[in-house]
Image (spheres, rainbow, N blue to C red):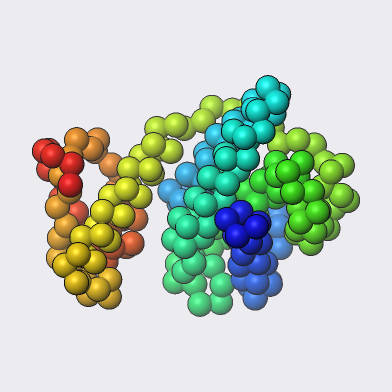
Length: 219
């Protein structure tokens, strides 16, 4: 309950609260988002859908449930937390980015609820009905697993989150609060070159003006 159902409910509740405040409604026609967080979340959903489907076909419920829990954790601790300022009446971004966030959030949540329905049948029934106004989630089609998955982006985002955790740990060790901006953070390790969108995620998350990567011992 604590590590999955309540987190999923909070994800749903956060979306509904802000969508209602913004009077946002799901649209049939959706535009492709250019925000790296949206793109990543969609790819993660593809990955977890494939894992859960394959696992269930092989009667491997342990792998299925672990995959669902891992996705909910990523959805909540990274996507929702990094997107809080993108939606709602006090959003800081453009209207286009706000709409992209709502579209991605709704689309991914709706599909994930269908994916989770065999595991948590009652709460998914409640969420799905409130979210879509459609008939029972248990009468819906299983989410599709076709399409190429961008595993490269998924792995890059894992690295970005690891870097963020290390910088947070270093700040804590040195007694430097997150509210205090830093001029630069130097990351040592054999990391591949990240695009600017991913670099910006690091800088925003850890309140650093610039990031420098150097080859050497990972630290």
